Image (tube, rainbow, N blue to C red; front, top):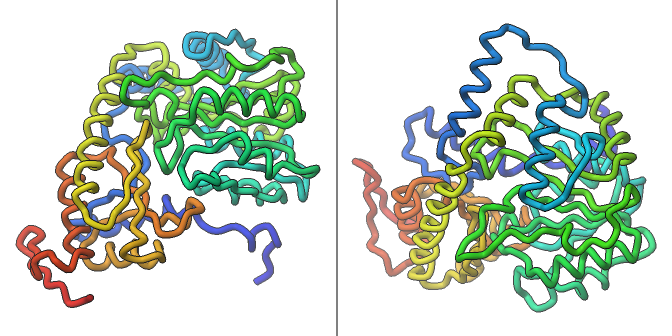
Length: 405
């Protein structure tokens, strides 16, 4: 079979593959615990569901504009003003089938073949392949101090004549690190001076803990004109627990948004009218579910970190936000894929290998599930890895015997 060079360079999404594997195991009746998930388990806001049902009952399920309906764009404009103190015009907004599509279309609009896109490490699994789909060169940057918190010097050292854009995801998937206000100010100033596109992936921006407040990149921008190269990405998947609704958006200068809309119009047309109605309902409705979820996630994070800290040989950096913990398991196995597969096979706990995020020896663990799953999942992992644990473990009525070293 003959396939393109681009297709040959792209790997499957490991996170989506794990979701599929969890579903298959559960369908078989296996007592799997999915600590690799990337979506909140609470229900979507009632306002979103009511809005969807109301429109469904009209039977008017039609095409929409490629950049989103006027009503959704109005809701995004309001959201942007309330959360970023930034007044945007409809021409500055494009709605997409999820924040992932908004990022993909933004990259397609600005990246030429062999141009480079920089992003801190660890990074979301899709960034490298999204850049490759544009025939660009992904350039991950590991902080020199060994932490999850990049400094402007780390980025500056990797910028060259072929650099076209920088992607910043804070709070970060997978580490949960919320980058400092100083760093965000520095990166905004640096990209403006070097005439680089800056894609701010803010999908987790309101899911922050310990009294921290979301950081607004617009506060540090000097260029607020239609020449600005700041691209703000957001969506309803995480903050509103609406991952399956697939609505995201981009806010940028109107000329870029026009180009992005042209690209999207040939890819997917416009987002589903039903899902846009749901997003409008969530964004214009009661906002208390966001804080309720944030508090729940903060408590879940504390429980997960406490259990991991009692796990000898595991190194943990306490997440500032999101619903992920990126823990160092290299004392047990430096090959994170092999370790993750072992945990699935031996104790049916799903984790995401750190190598997929650019850091070997780590596992990404999600605490967006139940407290029961967090506790039991880590206990199973501890039993599988800690040779000082009892030789037997019961999962329900099933007895497991550790027959490996």
